[in-house]
Image 1: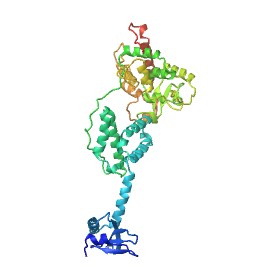
Image 2 (image 1 turned 90 degrees about the vertical axis):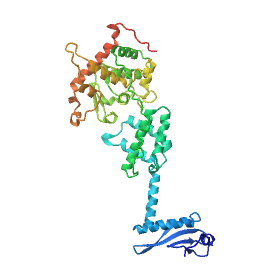
Image 3 (image 1 turned 135 degrees about the horizontal axis):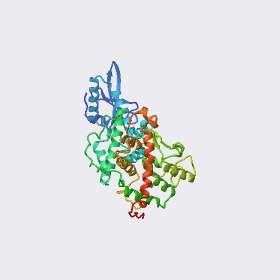
Image 4 (image 1 turned 120 degrees about the vertical axis):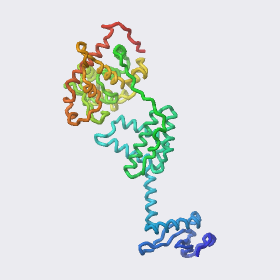
Length: 418
């Protein structure tokens, strides 16, 4: 018989457990300790089973009946309510352990150990920094519970500080983490998929570079007069000659440089394109490196170690800070801009007699370690426009020397270093 709440509310404990039945197999189990617990008795596949529905009075009579009816509906669909409850608990526990932080850690581990596609150290560091911008808002939240609005708000906080590019990259990283969660069966869909266009588009900003020969000559003479740490000066003098990315330069190790053969070998794990890159060395570059090696304490470590520790490379801000010390603003020149300088002036170089380009576009692109997917040719660097690149590297160093000595062949004032 279907009862009102009063009998359940007034039920007193006895020496042994007893039941107060409601209807449809629902009953209240009263324990000698005074505890009262809802149970549902049902049969499935000819076997009698019981399902716990909660404790009374936390779970009232009306709620217990709702839970009973839901279990009956599962039975009607051929499901076992006890098994479904266990599965629901397991899913809930799993989702609670799959926080954004936990999934991000797994994703980072995969990308850092992904064979030829593994992140370079610089890329890993940048993504770790981006993650830390998102972590306060999303880190401890299960990925399955994160709403698009939460991601948007986390990125908008970054945007509000004036860091539009950072906000955009943080959104992209979050999307990558969510897609990894989808791929590993921890999430149904990426919550950022409908947020495209929600952030303000950052202005495209190229690395500042000097593209005029006369101004480049002024900069080279300013570098000659740099009075800071000798390692920083060597790196500044070397950077315009070698076409390398700043991270490839400052993280270089002596083991990568063969002065006898005149080759600088950038390993795949440090190259942006995630494949080895070989750079020919001009006579001037070899001489600079030989001079630096004579001053180096540990010739098995970094070419440009940190001032504070020989076990770490030079800081990523050191060279740009040195350029600022010379009086050049970030709008005028950056260390990365030396690559744009070389690319522009090499592409402009012409034979004075024929007017034809001195260097092929392919050789220049290979020197800058851009593109190219021919794995067979990459295995043999000397077949990759190598002869032309060797000749071009020497021509470029000679050209830089000519620009640096510009005062000998043309009259224009030196820039004050400051």
